[in-house]
Length: 493
Image 1 (cartoon, rainbow, N blue to C red):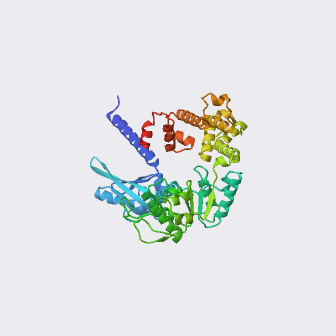
Image 2 (spheres, rainbow, N blue to C red):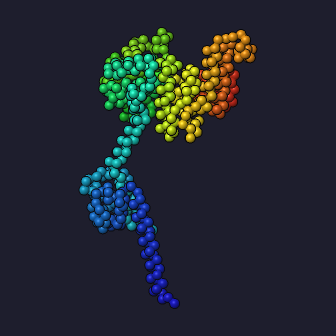
Image 3 (cartoon, rainbow, N blue to C red):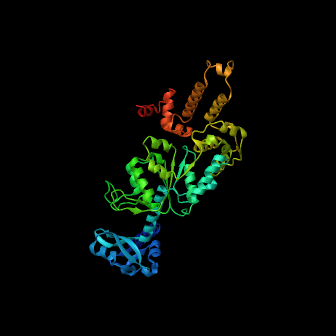
């Protein structure tokens, strides 16, 4: 039989062992966090600190344990002692700690067991680290809002005479402070030219900001461009905010789709160009700025001036150095080098090893009109690459989307003269060329809609046309797409 004392000693050993396990677990927990933690007993003597604490404070564990909570205070009152006196938690107290007088933010809570105060626990945050993270967050937000100019003239692919002229004009314009107007159809590469002009100018180390003038409402675009003063409108920041013109000071601002800007904002933009100053929304004081303006449009601004939709004085201010970027259908000799360039990008982005493009593919691409220009060409080639098997290294006609081949047939109809006895023209009841084109376009739209399971937005993007244009053609050709029928009715109600 075991003695009574033996049983008590065994139970005591088990309790001690359990306490050691709890202490080890507690140390593992507090050492797993990046927050600095210190623990004191009811007398304010340090009993436990973690690794993050010693790194932040600049004192070793041996320096602190068994010492008063005041040992790590450089400036200010010990929050441990305050909590022990009041038995109340404290939060967000700024103070300086350690030999290096590190500025920190302190939260301290009391430790109470069965209603009895047993000590307190402090969690300490490095304010300098918080500031750094805040600045990094601001920088990330800035990069999201502001596009860094990452392209140069070397990235502009083209050997056609029209593209050579456009590049030569842009290179000459880049070394001057003059305003540049880029005009050309959607998808021709106007933004690419804007990047290159900025990177070739003496402002290349300054901010490059892109603004899509059609993507924002008039009031929002105004506050984004010109900034606002405190209380300028409901929801405005109490401190006010700089506008994009101020942030682009000594740099470049790229105003895309300038033709969509309202007449009111056109007047304010004219002041920027003439006076080199802006006035914030809700303010009166002019602010001087030094900004290079590059604008772009895919509409005829001269016609917009005649129709009263664009200010004539602003038009001439923007039209200092006009650069026309030709559509892809007018420079088809650029298709082969463009395809090679896109294939190189696809190999990098998709991890592929495509070595060549068959001549038949180039012939097919040359017979297409490319209404979406280079943007559409990129879309088609990327989709063709996705259609390829992993072991294939030559891009062939079977990989090209079907609607491109359908348009090739349409081009063959246009090239061949009409012959009365030609069965290809008589088999549909002497169908004329316009009717053939309509049938071909209708068939292409139906096939692409089916390939995207009726998704009109994806179909429009793939075809390089707007969603409204797609809805118009679907209505024109009586193409029913029940997934989007309500949307079509809404647009044409």
